[in-house]
Image (cartoon, rainbow, N blue to C red; front, side, top):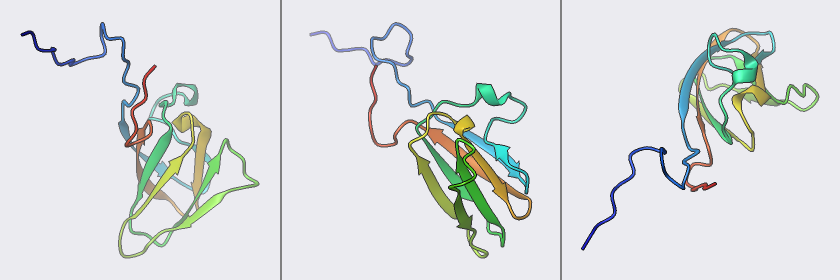
Length: 121
């Protein structure tokens, strides 16, 4: 009896795994800054459906903007004694989210396509 061969890449497959996660670190300041890989044009931002943030212990306040919409920001006061974690869902890529902070803070974030769900195309 022949057994199926495990697929180790997307090459030649009828199923395409879109859940290619990437991790980034970026410094956010008081200026509105788009999320993007360092040294890469904003138009080349990472496709994803959610962004998981890890903010360092800090007395800073980070404000996130969806599609640079500064009229409806999401403000997150950071925990001063432990990291703050937050997941921003319902986006299409890192380039549609911008951030600013009341003081400079280095943030880490990881992109994903619906953690816990399988997407096939």
